[in-house]
Length: 160
Image (cartoon, rainbow, N blue to C red; front, side, top):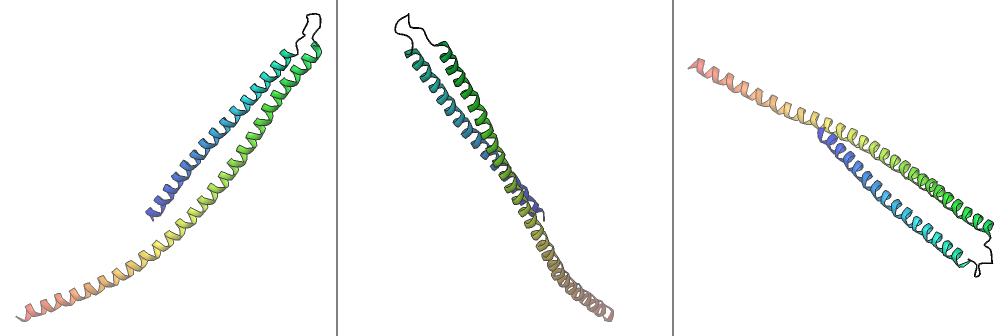
């Protein structure tokens, strides 16, 4: 029975370690994805900045359209803010989905292990009853024979 519980503890430990490895891989993957998105945003900003520099007037008399510049800057800032929120909500949704799936799988595995432990416990109990019956009967036979031998020896000593 103890070996069954030991096996369950071992499986439980293995599940926890496996879950930690999966979480670490997921974190690394998300970090890589966020880093690549940040690089993309930065390159877009640099491209917009260079395009705006190229748009500068050739002659000092040609004025820049300040309103157009403000609208462009506002659009870029809104895009950056919206992208971060979208990414965060997407990552949170995926993390929640993965967490729920891991929980269901862990729960299912735990329930299976409990069933296995119960079945093993019942089999061990039945086996121990059989062994006890078999050994008990053998012991009774040995005791009966020893009693007969002792009585026979006692009878021979008395008669001698």
